Each structure stands twice: as C-alpha cells, then as structure tokens.
Image (tube, rainbow, N blue to C red; front, side, top):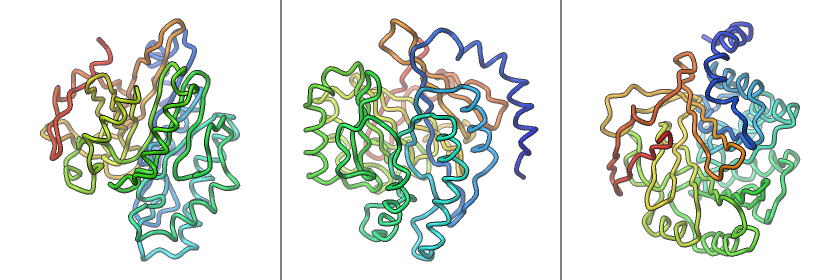
Length: 324
C-alpha cells in the first residue's frame, strides 16, 4: 500500500532530529546515491520508498544526485514503444521534474532496464535517447558526444564518468574513450575521480552471483580504473547495499529503492531498501557515508553490520569501513 504524502512528511518530522546529527554538520558537498527505483516490467508508477527518498532529498537539499541505473522498468520485448514512452513519462513526473523544480543537478547511468546494450533492446535505447535529448541534465560536460550512454562531466572539483555498463560487456572502443577522458588535466587535477555504472565489478548479492550479472573481465577493468587513479566506482543492479574497497578503489554498491531488494552473499541480514548520502566536510578530501534503511524508519546502517568480506563467483572484496 502506498503511503500518503502526509504520512511520509510526518515520518520525516519524527526522525529529522536524529538524522540531522549525522548529516547537518558543516560540509561543502552532499551527494545522494540512488539506483534501481523501478517496479515490475512496464510499471509507470513508483513505490512508497521512492516517494520517501524524494521527500528526504527535498529536505536534505543535496548538491548533486547520482543515479546508478534502472530508472524505468523496461528490458522486455513484450512492451510496446508507447508503453516505454509512458514509463519515461512516469519517471519524469516522479523524479525528473521534481529535481528540476528543486534545481538539483543530477547525473545518471542507463541500467539494463533503461536501455540494455545487449543487442536485443536497441529500440529501448532509441527511446532512451528520445526521452533524454530534451531532458538532458544541466551539467558541465567535458565530453557528451555519446550521451546518454556514456559521457564525462566536471562537477565542482570532481571528475565523473558515466559509462555504458548496461550489460556485462564493455567495448574496447569505450574503454579507450574512458582512458582518454581520465588522461586529461581536468581529470588529473580533480580532487576525486568517480565512475558511475549499473553493473558492478564483483558480485555482492544473492541471485546476482552469476555470469552476466557482473562485468566480464572485472579484474582487467579494475586494473584500468586503478591505473587511471579512479577513486570511486558507484554501481547498482544487485539491489544490495555494500561498500567495498580494493587496493584503494572504493566500490560503493547502491541498494535499491524500488522492487526486489536482495540479501548479500552469504549473509543472514534481511534485504533492505536504502538511500545513501555522501558528505564531504570543509577541509576534508574524503566523503563520509551515511546509508539509511528506508523500510525501518531511516535507521542508519553501520558498516560493522555488514560482512567483512564477500566472495562471489568472480572474486573476493573486503568491506570499506568508512566510519573508522
């Protein structure tokens, strides 16, 4: 059952005092990380937890929002073009237009449900272009010749690449483009280099610990990121919150706000819908992370609750203890 707006606002009021202790200290940048907001195939509506996240975004007034994919519920050959257009219309009504009204900048990456690059959903990719061309976020683009599939931007002192990781194969052409972007002075001089994509390098969630649900040649892609001094890789798709770190690269796996949250591999923790707020305090170069459980009164999730190590089908990653 969908929460009425008045109830969501009441919950915001009830829990704002506790949350403000962890989010309202002096800061020079706040970023909200979201992903996987879609409901079942063809849905033009969004669930109550997406509504709740949007209420909190309006309250937090972040500087920037990053979407790690799956904004609509496509990737089905049973859907007509009009149905796909209607889904993008639903996204614009619930997410796009409200963010524009708030004057909140946002960047996104296309997930497999938004326009899969597998080769079977080229019509969905064309409809993604149709939607995003007139709704292109107002950002400082460094290179947007392949927008909306992959592009680079400069946001304040951050350099951000959104890449086309909507399926498990990354083309050599795109990898060459990414390395060229990261070789520029604007990337080298940035305080942090961030990559944004739906599929993660390494598996973290039950039901997603499979070939095709993670990026192929992940070790080589990891080495490419490390070689080019990428600081963060934000991903979605696995519907499970897990912050990881490997040899200095922080891999932040966003939990879902929409349907189908999943448990972590080998963990007894229940699946949780989450939203994440990254905050950089004045004088610091590192982001603190606060992740909230949307289904449990915005309870803050401590990294110590999460498995110290996750070992999936293609490798092992360790928890990023960002509160230490």
